[in-house]
Image 1 (cartoon, rainbow, N blue to C red):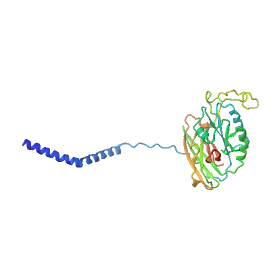
Image 2: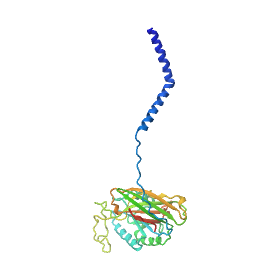
Image 3: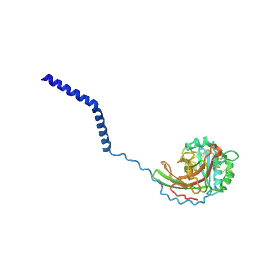
Image 4: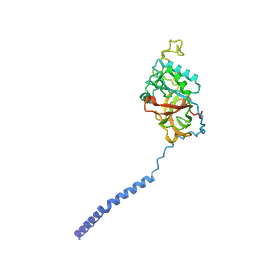
Length: 312
């Protein structure tokens, strides 16, 4: 009887092992999936971060009438002894055309350089104490000596504005939310982009990365006469701290480049370590070319951080 029981048991086991091989693995796999799904369903969901809200747009409807302003992008460096004269030339141009010249300072090889410098250097070239006026060439060159700024700004401010810009922003702790709009008076053909710089006033620091070398310390005709060489604790103005778009701008859709067309862009910026009271936004529309001398800034706008700058 024992032998029979053993044989019977072996037959039973063999039969069910065959069934297990045939159907059981699939059943076990399905059970594992069911258990796994049940576990996931019972687990708490991972919260999705809420993005910082854009400023509630106080920007009004485009007016269709815009002032032609000029972007002065000039290169400088704390170690550049002739740059104080470029600062003087900048101020002279701004005084000659109040409200129409918007300067930005691009630093090279000092404590204020950012990656933007490398892009502009590769695209247009660079030279401290020189700069670009609306990125438009003069006498075949787009990078202009500071002595050429006044005459070229005069030409550029006399041109008609093909577009206008408005800027709004809000600050919440170390975060800034930015809205920029551009409106077009006429249809535009080609590759256009909108660029937004975050700039700062009164930027200073300690040591050679910030103290300004001054070749005019002994020149009584200079406004930098007897200020020291270097000028310790020098306060740098209009310094580009960040670029909120791509360095050469974010492309504007062709469908927006029509008479009465409108472009709207929203950005956020981390302003940790910056004095919000010294921050300004600079936004501009460019026609992007294929060589250094085929770019052009159509118009530019500047706004204090946290303050609405409507169309003008």
